[in-house]
Every structure is written in structure tokens, then in C-alpha cells.
Length: 482
Image 1 (tube, rainbow, N blue to C red):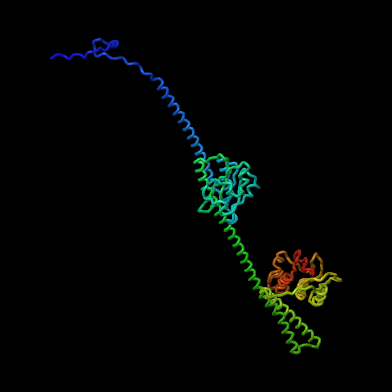
Image 2: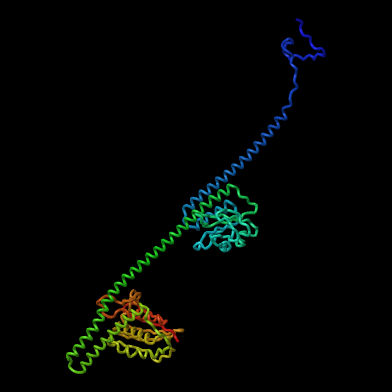
């Protein structure tokens, strides 16, 4: 079988043998030209460089953002500790305002809280404004911005229409944008802050998250402060009520004691003149007298005892009328000198210690006064009776003084005087300057109480002054000039 013949045509040139190889060893290799790889490697290096630079910038931004976030968290942690330790709304507001001003670099800021029983929002603190400026920025409740429908529990920017120009001082001449931060708890807007920010300010997500945390902390703290204040007010009110009840109970106990003493004294006071009346009458009926003069003296003593008994009963009846509101007075213009002339003979007949002088004013030239003549006469006789009863030596004088629109009548005695402690209760029912059943001086203790009510009903006053026991006393009444 014959071998195949090569195809006709030109033959390929022979390839040089690689160095070191034997011409007869293996097939011959065709040489390949080298590839230019330097430019591609340079491009790859530059691309890698750009990527590394971008990663470095991103890492730096992330590190700065992380540092800022960490700083915000530390600040919020410190604020949380401070707010948890305080129970005063003013301190809460001050802390929140400091954080807002320092951390968010606002130009101006004001914080409001719900006050006046929920009637309005009162500015409690401000930054970047004078106190006079921010304290005038009161806003209504429950919607502080009634001109626009706001979602009050959501932070938001305020347009110029929202505040109707009332926050002009906060907005300022630079036309800063206002950012509204509410402090809401249990659907109650307890307060809010408004920040004046630069026009180009954009809130970052981290900033909004920090504001949200601060909102919650501030709202809870304001709510706790409100509860604490409310509880404190209730506690103070209960303490005042307790003290008032204790005072009333003490007064009731004292009144009960005085009333018991009054009943015992009144029984004695009524029994004494009644016993005299019955005794003198029996002596006259039995004819146990020597002559007509002695009988007349007995009848006179019986009549005096009857008059005294009638006076005691009148005092009790007057007090009952005063307490029931049925006692009436009828003021009218009346001559004071004439009234004193009517009082004088009655007072001259009152019993008094030997040597006690009764002194009357002379040649009075005073205008008429507006009084109920019979009631003023009753007051004067009561004061003179007391003065004579408590004066052992010296004098009892009636003095008249004129003041602008008023006339003062003074009954001045040199008697036993009144202690400072007794003066505080002298115009109380059933009270006298000296207590006890074995008193040297009689009386029911109603006279001055009745006089006080009568003078007040006539538009006048009554008062007592004394430097103490043994120094005498002065009773003064004032009446208006007609």
C-alpha cells in the first residue's frame, strides 16, 4: 500500500528550533510576540486606589456619625438621670432647653408648659431672647396655634400663618424657620418647645431620633412634676383643713366649756336678785320692819333687784336675737350731747365704790351722729356699768374726740385693767376678763358681745385697750357724723 502524497503548493518556511534543543527532537514551535500588560495593571491600581479612598471617606463619615450618635446617647443618658431625679417642672424645662440649644445649635428657643389649670400655655424659659421677650409669648390651650390644623403630638415645621404673628420675636429679623417639638403624655399636650433654626438646616435621621427620645423623657418628667405638684397642693390643702379642724375643735371645746360656765354663772346671777326680791317681799308681807322708812328701803332694794334681773334677761334675749338675725337697729341723725344727758342720771345711780368719781364732758360742740339712740344708750350704759363695777378707786370718765367723719366716745377708768391674754377673748360670748366660779365680780359675760354687734350694725366700731392688770382700761366706740 503506497503512502499519501502531500498536496501540491508552496511549503511553509521552516521554524527556528528553540535554543538548547536538538533539531531532531519533537515538532518545531512557532514563536509568539509579547503582550503589553503595564497599562492594564495601572488602570486596575488606579481603580483600587479610588475604591480605597471612597472607603476611607465612608469610614470617616461613619466614624463621625458614630461619634456624634454616641455623644447624643451620652447626653440623653445624663439628661434622663437628671430628669428622673427632679420633681419640679421648672428644672425639667431648664434642662430640656439647655440640651436643645447646645446639641442642635438653634438660634433661639422657648419652652412652654400647660399652666393656669389647663387654660393656656405659659413660657417657662427661653434662649437667645430677653426674659421680657419670651415671657410675653403666652399661647392658648388646648391648641396653641388655632389658626392652622396641626397634629399637636407630632414634631413639625411651623409656617408663618401658624402662630398668627405671635411668635415674631422668636422668628426674628433673620426669618428663621420654627420647629415645633411637643411633649405629650397620655394624649395630653403638657408642653412644647419651638426652635428657631437656620433656613438651610436639614434634620438628620439621628437628630430626629434623639429629639424623639428627648420628647418622651421630657413629657414623662413634666407629667410626674405635674402629679407631684398636684399631690403637694392636695397635701397642703389637707394640712390646712386639718389645722382648721383642730382650731374649730379647740374653739368648740372652749365654747362648750364657756357655755357650761355661763349656765352656772347665769343661774347664780339670776338666783341672786330673785332671792333678794322674794326675801324683801316676804319681810314686808310679814310686817318685819320698824317703820315706813325701813319698809320703803326694803321695797327699793326689791325694785333694784328686779331691775338687775330684768337687765340680765334682756341681755340673754338680745343675744338670742343677734344669733337668729332678728335684732334690728334704726339709725338716724341724733344729738350726741342730748344722748349723754339722758345717760348721765342713769349712770349716776349705778352702784360704785366710795370715792370713785364719775366725770362727764362739758360744753360739747359737735355735730349730730347717725345712730339708733336707744341702742347707743344701751351700749354706753353697759360700758359705764362695767367701768364702775371694776373700779375700786380713782375715776371713770367719759371723753369725746372728733376725727374726720367720725366721733369717738371713750370710757376711761382707773380700775383693775385687762391682761393681754384676756383682751383677745373679751368680745367673745360667755367670756370675761377673769374666769372661775368664785369671781369677785358678777355678770354673764354677754354685755360686750352685745355691744360689739350693736355697734357693727350701726356702722361703728368698739375696741378696748389696756396696758395690763392694775393699769385701768379704755373702751372706745366710734360713730359716723351725720
